[in-house]
Image (cartoon, rainbow, N blue to C red; front, top):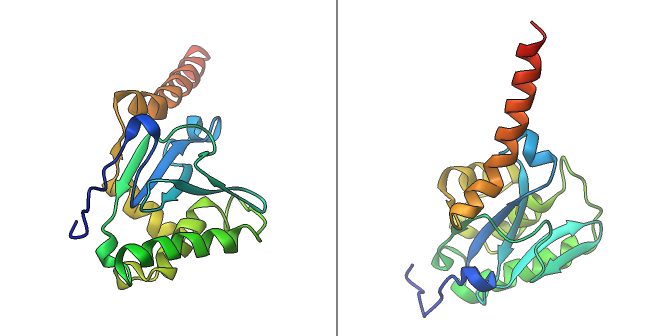
Length: 168
Protein backbone atom coordinates (compact mmCIF):
# COMPACT_ATOMS: atom_id res chain seq x y z
CA UNK A 1 0.00 0.00 0.00
CA UNK A 2 1.65 3.15 -1.20
CA UNK A 3 -0.11 5.40 1.34
CA UNK A 4 0.95 3.32 4.34
CA UNK A 5 1.46 5.98 6.99
CA UNK A 6 1.26 3.73 10.02
CA UNK A 7 -2.22 2.45 9.25
CA UNK A 8 -2.33 -0.89 11.00
CA UNK A 9 -5.11 -3.33 11.64
CA UNK A 10 -5.91 -3.60 15.35
CA UNK A 11 -7.92 -6.82 15.66
CA UNK A 12 -8.29 -6.56 19.44
CA UNK A 13 -10.10 -3.21 19.11
CA UNK A 14 -11.84 -3.99 15.80
CA UNK A 15 -10.02 -1.26 13.86
CA UNK A 16 -9.56 -2.15 10.20
CA UNK A 17 -8.33 0.88 8.22
CA UNK A 18 -9.12 0.70 4.49
CA UNK A 19 -10.79 -2.68 4.92
CA UNK A 20 -13.97 -4.42 3.99
CA UNK A 21 -15.07 -6.51 6.96
CA UNK A 22 -17.53 -9.39 7.28
CA UNK A 23 -19.28 -11.37 10.00
CA UNK A 24 -21.82 -14.21 9.94
CA UNK A 25 -25.53 -13.53 10.24
CA UNK A 26 -27.02 -16.05 12.69
CA UNK A 27 -29.26 -18.64 11.06
CA UNK A 28 -28.70 -17.34 7.52
CA UNK A 29 -24.95 -18.02 7.45
CA UNK A 30 -25.51 -21.33 9.25
CA UNK A 31 -27.33 -22.62 6.16
CA UNK A 32 -25.44 -20.64 3.47
CA UNK A 33 -21.94 -19.90 4.80
CA UNK A 34 -21.01 -17.50 2.00
CA UNK A 35 -23.74 -15.05 2.98
CA UNK A 36 -23.05 -12.63 5.82
CA UNK A 37 -22.90 -9.01 6.92
CA UNK A 38 -20.37 -6.58 5.42
CA UNK A 39 -19.03 -3.17 6.35
CA UNK A 40 -16.31 -0.80 5.23
CA UNK A 41 -13.84 1.04 7.46
CA UNK A 42 -12.57 4.59 7.33
CA UNK A 43 -8.83 5.36 7.37
CA UNK A 44 -9.11 5.55 11.17
CA UNK A 45 -10.29 1.93 11.20
CA UNK A 46 -13.82 2.81 12.31
CA UNK A 47 -16.28 0.42 10.67
CA UNK A 48 -19.40 1.79 8.96
CA UNK A 49 -22.14 -0.69 8.04
CA UNK A 50 -25.70 -0.50 6.75
CA UNK A 51 -27.24 -2.29 9.72
CA UNK A 52 -30.95 -1.91 9.00
CA UNK A 53 -33.59 0.45 7.65
CA UNK A 54 -32.37 4.04 7.77
CA UNK A 55 -29.43 3.08 10.01
CA UNK A 56 -25.69 3.03 9.34
CA UNK A 57 -23.72 1.90 12.37
CA UNK A 58 -20.42 3.46 13.30
CA UNK A 59 -17.97 1.42 15.34
CA UNK A 60 -20.75 -0.97 16.37
CA UNK A 61 -20.66 -3.69 13.71
CA UNK A 62 -24.03 -5.42 13.45
CA UNK A 63 -24.03 -9.16 14.24
CA UNK A 64 -20.80 -9.03 16.22
CA UNK A 65 -17.10 -8.65 15.64
CA UNK A 66 -15.60 -9.15 12.17
CA UNK A 67 -14.50 -12.69 11.33
CA UNK A 68 -13.02 -11.86 7.91
CA UNK A 69 -11.48 -8.79 6.31
CA UNK A 70 -9.94 -7.55 3.09
CA UNK A 71 -7.55 -4.59 3.15
CA UNK A 72 -7.72 -2.41 0.05
CA UNK A 73 -5.27 0.19 -1.26
CA UNK A 74 -6.48 3.78 -0.71
CA UNK A 75 -4.15 4.90 -3.54
CA UNK A 76 -6.62 3.25 -5.92
CA UNK A 77 -9.33 5.70 -4.88
CA UNK A 78 -9.71 9.17 -6.32
CA UNK A 79 -7.81 11.60 -4.06
CA UNK A 80 -6.25 8.77 -2.02
CA UNK A 81 -6.99 8.63 1.69
CA UNK A 82 -9.24 11.70 1.74
CA UNK A 83 -11.16 10.28 -1.23
CA UNK A 84 -11.55 6.97 0.59
CA UNK A 85 -12.97 8.60 3.71
CA UNK A 86 -15.21 10.92 1.70
CA UNK A 87 -16.62 7.95 -0.25
CA UNK A 88 -17.37 5.96 2.90
CA UNK A 89 -18.98 8.94 4.62
CA UNK A 90 -21.07 9.94 1.61
CA UNK A 91 -22.29 6.37 1.08
CA UNK A 92 -23.22 6.20 4.77
CA UNK A 93 -25.21 9.43 4.43
CA UNK A 94 -27.07 8.01 1.43
CA UNK A 95 -27.86 4.74 3.20
CA UNK A 96 -29.13 6.51 6.33
CA UNK A 97 -31.99 7.59 4.06
CA UNK A 98 -32.72 4.10 2.66
CA UNK A 99 -34.88 1.15 3.56
CA UNK A 100 -32.89 -2.08 3.99
CA UNK A 101 -33.72 -4.92 1.60
CA UNK A 102 -31.96 -8.24 2.22
CA UNK A 103 -31.85 -9.17 -1.47
CA UNK A 104 -31.07 -6.00 -3.41
CA UNK A 105 -30.27 -2.95 -1.26
CA UNK A 106 -28.22 -4.17 1.66
CA UNK A 107 -24.87 -3.92 3.43
CA UNK A 108 -23.02 -5.12 0.32
CA UNK A 109 -24.75 -2.38 -1.70
CA UNK A 110 -23.61 0.20 0.85
CA UNK A 111 -19.99 -0.95 0.40
CA UNK A 112 -20.37 -0.93 -3.41
CA UNK A 113 -21.73 2.63 -3.27
CA UNK A 114 -18.76 3.75 -1.17
CA UNK A 115 -16.33 2.17 -3.65
CA UNK A 116 -18.15 3.84 -6.56
CA UNK A 117 -18.16 7.25 -4.88
CA UNK A 118 -14.40 7.07 -4.24
CA UNK A 119 -13.96 5.71 -7.80
CA UNK A 120 -12.03 2.77 -6.40
CA UNK A 121 -9.82 1.07 -9.00
CA UNK A 122 -11.74 2.80 -11.85
CA UNK A 123 -14.37 0.05 -11.61
CA UNK A 124 -18.16 0.18 -11.43
CA UNK A 125 -19.04 -1.73 -8.28
CA UNK A 126 -22.23 -3.55 -7.34
CA UNK A 127 -23.05 -5.92 -4.52
CA UNK A 128 -22.19 -9.01 -6.60
CA UNK A 129 -18.74 -7.68 -7.62
CA UNK A 130 -18.02 -6.71 -4.02
CA UNK A 131 -19.11 -10.14 -2.79
CA UNK A 132 -16.97 -11.96 -5.39
CA UNK A 133 -13.87 -9.83 -4.72
CA UNK A 134 -14.26 -10.22 -0.98
CA UNK A 135 -14.97 -13.96 -1.07
CA UNK A 136 -11.88 -14.71 -3.16
CA UNK A 137 -9.40 -12.38 -1.46
CA UNK A 138 -10.43 -12.08 2.19
CA UNK A 139 -8.56 -13.33 5.23
CA UNK A 140 -9.91 -14.66 8.47
CA UNK A 141 -9.25 -12.45 11.49
CA UNK A 142 -8.05 -15.52 13.42
CA UNK A 143 -8.83 -19.20 13.97
CA UNK A 144 -11.92 -18.29 16.02
CA UNK A 145 -13.22 -16.28 13.05
CA UNK A 146 -12.92 -19.36 10.86
CA UNK A 147 -14.71 -21.51 13.45
CA UNK A 148 -17.47 -18.92 14.00
CA UNK A 149 -18.05 -18.83 10.24
CA UNK A 150 -17.99 -22.57 9.47
CA UNK A 151 -18.83 -24.58 12.61
CA UNK A 152 -22.58 -23.81 12.70
CA UNK A 153 -22.88 -24.78 9.01
CA UNK A 154 -20.98 -28.03 9.58
CA UNK A 155 -23.19 -28.89 12.56
CA UNK A 156 -26.39 -28.11 10.59
CA UNK A 157 -25.16 -30.07 7.57
CA UNK A 158 -24.21 -33.06 9.74
CA UNK A 159 -27.56 -33.09 11.55
CA UNK A 160 -29.53 -32.85 8.30
CA UNK A 161 -27.35 -35.52 6.67
CA UNK A 162 -27.78 -37.89 9.62
CA UNK A 163 -31.52 -37.32 9.68
CA UNK A 164 -31.77 -38.06 5.95
CA UNK A 165 -29.56 -41.15 6.16
CA UNK A 166 -31.47 -42.34 9.23
CA UNK A 167 -34.73 -42.43 7.26
CA UNK A 168 -33.44 -44.92 4.66
